[in-house]
Image (cartoon, rainbow, N blue to C red; front, side, top):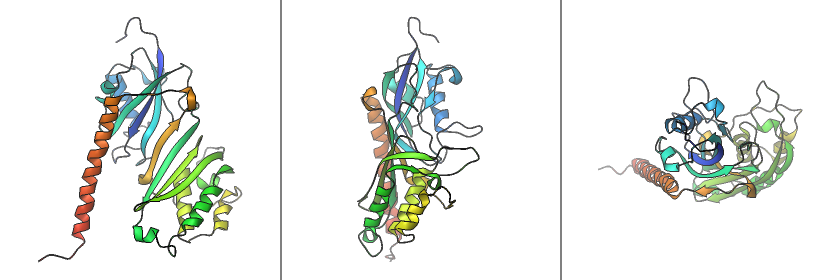
Length: 286
């Protein structure tokens, strides 16, 4: 339905999603349900777009299956002023928009981003994390700093058939312990496929004394082909996509409440499961 008197406008949205079992990553692909499919279905159902290939619909970052996001972004051109909760009403609870901004029609949500911020979370018993004889946290911090700056990240990415420029500028990396978790933060304008998960895998190998600092630095040598498994995708979160002062997002309070309510419900659900399995481990029957 065309709304008379409305000009075509491009809007940029912030959205979250949980990398649940039913989604095969964020990017559209034939015969599989993805995050983009859910967004496009909702936008078409609520008459924001009619044909995806004519709407300028564009998601700023692609993530693999089981990866989640808190501050992902997408944009499209529409004649309809966005009503956030209207869009959310057509989305599953584990996906939702929560902020938006009007941008120029030639704006690219992918290429206009100044940097992307990812977090990676991995659990370990607190007793292990506090034992310096098991975990060399100082060495992990050292290799995190070595990742900063311009490097060839070929050996920190999944290589496909197509030729890809493997040079990237890492703005910052950091690592912290919070309770029973190691939390990594990575900021860069762009990342290669599986780059973060592979960096995490090797940082952890340094921390648990499986490889040396020198062996880690060898990974920057593009003449070598070093194969290994990346870290689990469940711990990876696309935390935010930053556009600097060029974009000012308006947060929709009701949409934010919807998001936070869903997060609280899931936290309580899994806290109960955690306690259940904790109880089940103890032989105190009878």
